[in-house]
Image 1 (cartoon, rainbow over the protein chains, first blue to last red):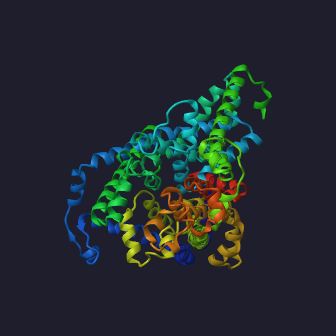
Image 2 (image 1 turned 180 degrees about the horizontal axis):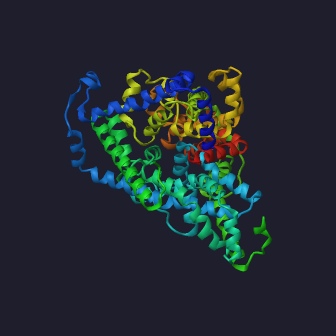
Image 3 (image 1 turned 90 degrees about the horizontal axis):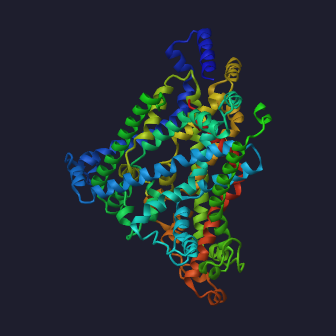
Length: 317
Length: 304
């Protein structure tokens, strides 16, 4: 497709002999097309980037971003030296890695399994149902978790008790918070996550399978030695994207599931930023914490991308 | 396909059986909670809370739905959400489609600059507080603008739309239109848009669902309860557990109050019903639109 576009572009250019300015003037409307998006990103994404400077200032709303005085790394030092720093970092990292370890491989497994089923009613039905939870809002999802895990009436608690075991206090025991968070995420997003792998699997050349069958390879071996290696580039890209977000645990769900009793393991950097910044109005301090978070994420992304590029030739850029 | 002609060997049959079992387990694990909620919303809450209702509704009742629909907060929430979703999605489309089209044109000078500028925001952002302060300085606090302007476009969706335009709109159309003296604006409105109903549907769905499900911006930017979208009302009921017989207020008529004197049970019944009611619009359209959603994800996955 790209080749094709390039070829016609070159043809037209040579036909009319356009110069660079000529091309800009001829397509002036395209700048009109992109202007709203440009303004949007400039204002609502680059605007806040300008505001990051308050992490190094003592921001006083009446003085504005420019007028507030510089204090250097004071807020960062305060955060790094605070007693909750290591707890927050540990909670954030462990929750992310836990989620990555469980939530990342499952869609791949499910997609490989789907791919073995020929198109039919069964496949359609299972897919429709497993995709569905993706559309449940985070508020409803949290509500479901709270309802199902309610110690007195919760469905899951009742099921566990039915087997004859005492159900743990899922939502008030800090030891259970991460598992509840991760497994509910698996329930909600595994099915949806298969789509992208299924797209990659549909591109596998059937001739590879035919050749393998002639060589006497079983279905399982073909999945292992043909299908799986063929989707490795897709897996790598998604892994890079996921790792780049390692400190960005979806704070919406964490925030909704937090309560004073599970706070020990449920407080992550992003919810801390929300609380200290918007609830307690410590603007500069929580901006500094947020900036620390973003910088670590960006560094992670760059590092993992570099490793992937070197080891597998697959990378985001 | 020649592959089918060859008989399945024993190991293959075993593998396929294990495969089907795995898929069945996944299917049941995902389906069961959904069925449970539907059944629980239609059951006598005493059966639900005692664990006697496992699969199908027991002691059928529509009281949960009655209470939900009698709650004025739900109605205003619904109304607000519909307005925010509709206007928000329109704005999203008006920004995304032209931008994506411009970026899809190989003769558009500066596309790399714009694409780069947009992409950076995917990996680095100002963070919560600077964004909040910006919205505040723009005077958008407690207004609809705070809910739709900061999310007026998404980079991911722009890329999806751009990939669609690149791969589905033949360049020859553009050539022909030029020869006929057509301007870019006319070309876009008269030719590109009518050919792009699939991607417009995909974009409207992606953006629409995210507006419908969004709660965090309203949590931080709205302080007037009358402006709360449905998700904020749900948060009060489902997460903060503020829904008791009292908050349903006068809605609880004498008969019902006598019939169900257990407030906790009423509250849990309402919870199940409210989950269904709030998710219903998406559930209702989802089976028909599923292929569009899938199509959107697949276009997005094509690297370009």
